[in-house]
Length: 69
Image 1 (cartoon, one colour):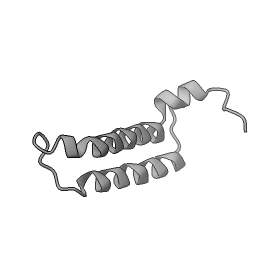
Image 2 (spheres, rainbow, N blue to C red):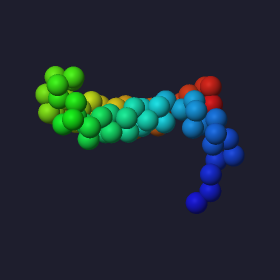
Image 3 (spheres, rainbow, N blue to C red):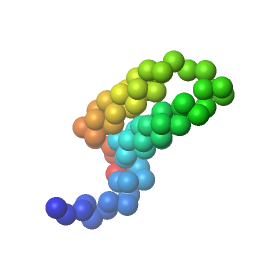
Image 4 (cartoon, rainbow, N blue to C red):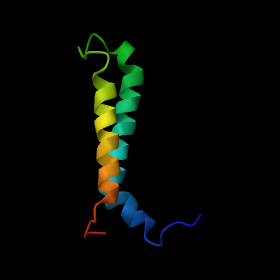
């Protein structure tokens, strides 16, 4: 396995990486949700749906051509 020569640029600018970062953040919030029920009145499956949508967005963004990169 070999990294891209401009992997830092891809890491910062690629939409797929941003969508994956959002899904990681949502996953962490889902773990903390039982402790935050008083502050965030959300349905139990809400984070699962959001994570699913961001992962789908990341997969689609991975296939799109991004001219900035």
